[in-house]
Image (cartoon, rainbow, N blue to C red; front, side, top):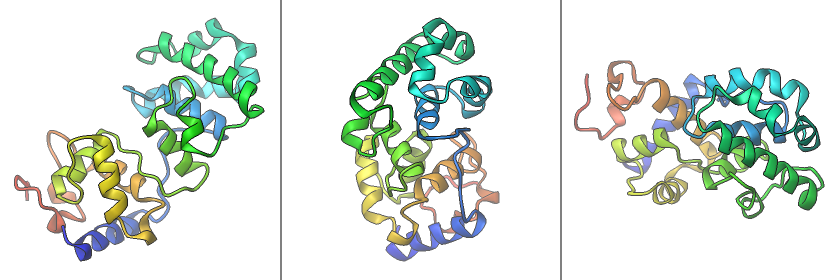
Length: 210
C-alpha cells in the first residue's frame, strides 16, 4: 500500500468510528491490566462476563490479594487457562504493591516484568490508559497488516515495527483499535466481509470477495 492509500485507509476507519474503544470492560488501570491478562486465548465477551462481579469487589492489587487465589479462581473459572492466569494475577498484584506502590507503571519495560504480562498486553495498557501510540499486534492486526499489504511481517513484533513506521501520526493513538475491530468484525480470518468493507478498494488482498 502507498502512503496515500494508508492515510485514506485510516481516515475512513476514523470516519466510521472516531473514538474506538476496547471491547474489554474495565474501571481503572489495574482492572484493565487484569482483564487483558485474562483475555489471552479467550474472548473479550467471556472475560467481561467473568470480571463483571470480580471487579466490583477486587479493583486494586490489595483487594485482589484479600480475595485470595481460590476466590479469584471461582470468578474466572469459565475462562480458558484460568488456573495459570489466576496465579499470574495474584503474583502481579503482589509485585505492583512491592515495587510500584500498588500503581500500574507507565513504561513497557516495567510492565513486561510483571507475571503474565507480555509485550502485547503492555502495549494495550500503555495505549488505553496512558494514551501512548503503541501497536498491540494480536491475530487480527497481524492478519490485516499482511493481508492488505500495509505492513507485511513474519512475526508480531516485525508487524508492530512496520506499522509504527507507516501509520500516519494523526491516526497513531487509535490505529491499533481500528485494526482490531476491523479484523474482528469485517476482515475475518476465514470469510472476510469484503462487500461490507469500507476500505476494500485500498486493500491488496488478492482473494477479495467483491
